[in-house]
Image (cartoon, rainbow, N blue to C red):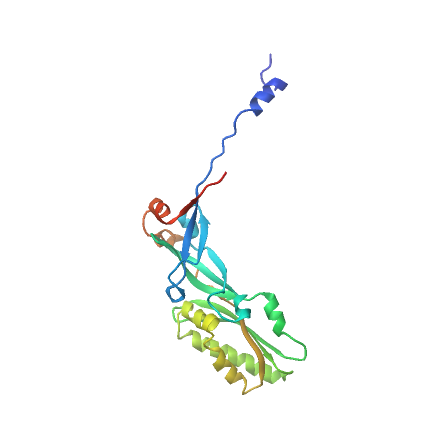
Length: 233
């Protein structure tokens, strides 16, 4: 009898064997924002290993940080850069408005003055900033060029005075520079709408060789102390 040939009975015996499935333990880990944005965790992320949390980008809505309705539709971006015994800690790295908000300010018979620039902050971080200024009526080419040049120079000068996180905080959430920018632009041509619709810290990525140093304490103790286990069926 040739045992290499699978008879119907032998095939049923093999298919009836229990299948071994190895399950990995998943955990919910709380994430803390920078100190100037609060001291309580604002979100929980799912992970298997705390090392996988480093460099992960967390996206949340700006509700609770801003007051106007259009700003509440904005997405705030945070990057996890440290894991301690209390949880994961993230840095503020940028924001993004949805396209619907941008389309509401772009209208016909107006001039669109837009810049996409990269600035160097006080802590030598490179931040990409995208700005749109809409005039009340159609402006001349020289006026549009002067507005773009003014916005670019002003944002570059302000970036040198702050570190990356505080620069984004003042630019995006507090809007501390908006009034002064608009007052300067109005000397060239009246502005109807002004929005910083996107920003991103391009130097916030932690190098792979430094990931282990960003985890403080024993990994197993961290998960047992701060994490909430998830049971998978």
